Length: 397
Image (cartoon, rainbow, N blue to C red; front, side, top):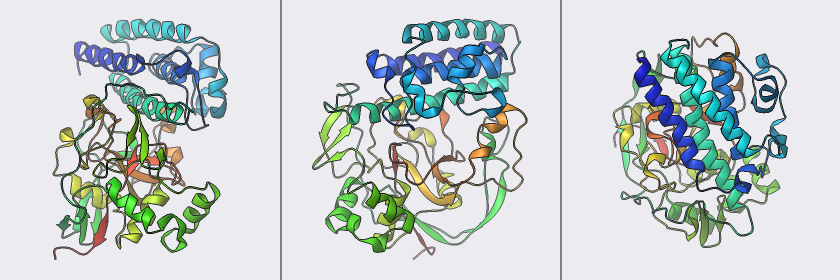
């Protein structure tokens, strides 16, 4: 990518982050309601820190301590759970920090003094944090007594059309998965490699709210037979009886409280809930190889993404709407090699105790996703925009 195009993309991604924060008050951007959800102010600063430290190689010692996330190679940092206690620097100071680093980055790009691949990594890193701004903000606002809307003008996304029983069949065999070619991909998507897939069927859409309502009505959250042992311990300890943000016949969205729409894609389900509902339906979750094989012939651009500004799932397509849990543990691909230096900590060191999700969500930027993209979260994560697509053994009926 030449300097002009790289500068244009840099400005667009950085501006989108600021745009997402525009509806928020100062107070909204300072709150950290749980250890996993960072304040918006911290996201604004951390993404800037990444460009200053990783790309420009000129870290500010104070900000390096405050806004380093998890890079051991770059020194000590504020504990994750204490990010919401940082009253200083102020939001105004963080915004000035962004402006200063933006100017330095644009000059460095124009003068050819930066590694364009590192810049591209930084931009995809910022897009990940754009998504986190929305998920973390939803938890911040949705758990407050007043449950205020992020925006009151948000439309409903188009609802799903096909019934839950429609399937696509695949004969299986030896297939290739993983990122191909020289375009951008994270290191955990490579190398592309061969796997053997047994014949399988995969649902044409994700489960809808009506499917979860049926599970609840059947006593699914009270019946241990459907749950993994860890999952049963998790939901009983947390007294979970419905998806996150459900309040009787309503649920919280970034547009405020709304009546639960039965045909909309179900969201904010943990891996444990996804697995239990699949078992109850006599099905299972797909493996990530099955998911990628099924998605590889589809156009990622057609999904419901953050660019559409609905910020709520609807259609149930394989790309967009909700991140889809797979039954695959997050592990390295054969031949995976961790990158040298601090960027080697980006993905590889998290390959333990997490499940792979695929497809992106209505919080994901459209140009950030591809069929090979591997997201990952612990099985108990519910604040992410995650849902369920069923699979079952066997090929064509």
